[in-house]
Image 1 (tube, rainbow, N blue to C red):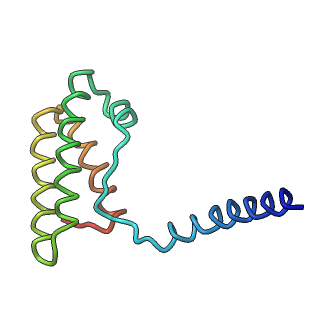
Image 2: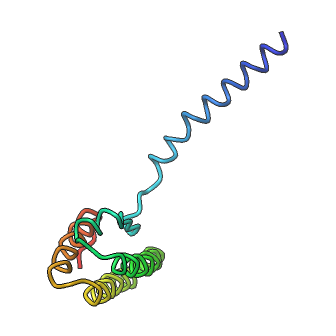
Length: 120
């Protein structure tokens, strides 16, 4: 009897924790400042070389850090830091990409920012 009761308690505990986890995620405020690019997809879309992909990943890591910094800021500082991060990303990517690749990259970046609710 004791084993059955303990097994039942264990099953209930696991099922309650599994049900509670999605509710916690739903209540968590999604961050619009977390910008994740799929490097492989972008590289394929832009027809990038391996060297360009490596440089793009370094630039994107820096961009992600700057956007997280902007997320932690408040008010007008947040807006200035966001704009600064975006403009820096654009200037770095301009040096890495050809004109045609850069035009496509700007389209992707603008769409991503618009989908996140960030305008610059």
